[in-house]
Image 1 (cartoon, rainbow, N blue to C red):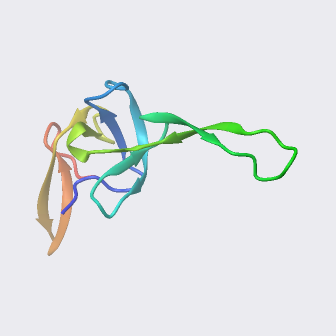
Image 2 (tube, rainbow, N blue to C red):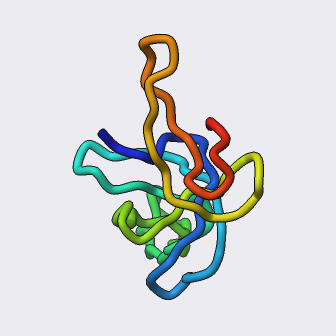
Length: 101
């Protein structure tokens, strides 16, 4: 089970944008995640119509979830995530402040 979901705020631990935080835009089927504004690359697009000029588009690339930490909504610090059973439902909790997410 993946510990990070769409809409979570995460902090990047490795790579060119390490130390920055952003929101998860997408969780891919391969297990990687796309974070808003982090790991951005420039892609050069060809013109779609004749007579127009090409453009450079910034696209966020996927990162491995092992390189990010979830930022707790309660204590506002990056922390590891654990799972508990509450009322026969599996919920995530912050391992620093013990609050459920």
